Image (cartoon, rainbow, N blue to C red; front, side, top):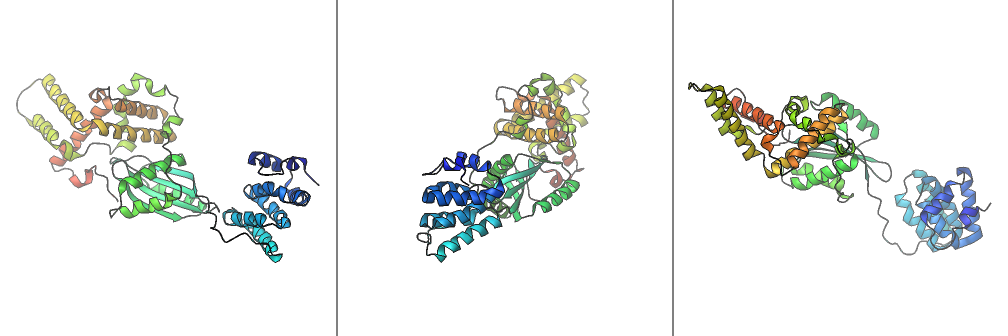
Length: 398
């Protein structure tokens, strides 16, 4: 039986959306007969509709392949050959091969060998990220799905300073990824949360380019680049936290006033400046504490505040402020996804303040608390109570 909705589309190249809409109205069991009738009634004029079927749902391709074989034209054979390597299901590919075989039996072959159609690139389908540690490193997993349904898991330790520190990309069944993720969450000292796949793609791409090819970590960066190469360069997405908070959420001044509390969170326990960078100020602080000179509490407080100001001026300017702003935005997403929206808003408020070149970071409680902690750690190193190697903030592979 002829289907009027399809008959109206026979001709040169019907709009794909109209063909899809017409096909969706035909019950799956009736579609093969409907396409056969269309091919017999209109011959090569039905080619455009049938070719669109090959590019749509797998069930449409299965139904269209025998109808294309009845056209007995080289154009039909070429359409079948081009579609075969990129079809998503075994049933569709088998139907196309059978149609090509029937055409060859009657002497119809595709014109010339021609290059095989390139398979569509894989697409990012799921991703997960850990909280950011004290060196600015986070773990990232990105699951890619190929055109035939196969999955590749891209795993990396990503530094906001050095790029990919460790990386690998391996074929994984989706169920296996789910099991490994459960184990990872149980063993990791930092929480892992789902993130938008396009954001993980962009983060991995940028980090792989920053890492370079030098060993020992160049191999990991190269593995990530190979896995992402077919996708091409991604567009830069907005930070994931912006999708979760209303535009005015982080504007409350009280968020900044309480922002030193962020450093009390378990995820931020390792957040401090590299002890070597503040060693001079830490020694100055120790000497002031151990001095036998009698000075007022006010003088002591002024001296301590001046030391903090000095470190902020030296260590939290320009690009470093933007670095910390990025860390805070990522940490905010983790906080929100782990049920702490108030802390997430606080982290975003500090990130925006650090990203604002007109705001003096010396007035931010978070920045002052960060420096206070840094001086404490550097002082412990100077006194020999902490090994310097264990508290270095330089990113490195594990």
